[in-house]
Length: 152
Image (cartoon, rainbow, N blue to C red; front, side):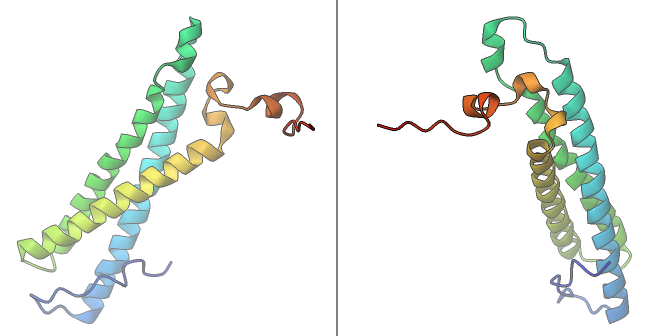
């Protein structure tokens, strides 16, 4: 699988065996990848359920706020989960609170940002997740398949 956290330097405040630190980096990589995958799946499922429940009852409903996108904030929960798991793994290696907090915060932000961006990209790319009534399609796409060109 490789080591995603090779850039994460050994903390200067404590001396850690190379093998122990490498094992921690591999475990942290697995934690982040697992948390991102679980969070993206949860966001996609919750988004799809919420989007299907929205109804258009009046013409103005088409232009109201699209609230299913709020499920992207679930990425914060995935980041918290990754930070807690990182702190548990790291507490066996180091005793310094500053090192523990710094690396856990890095895991939190990395997991949250990657999960939110991946989920949003999949929401945009995978068409069936958003009901057709809420998808934007230009008129040329709906009618002819290519843009109209005017010749003057």
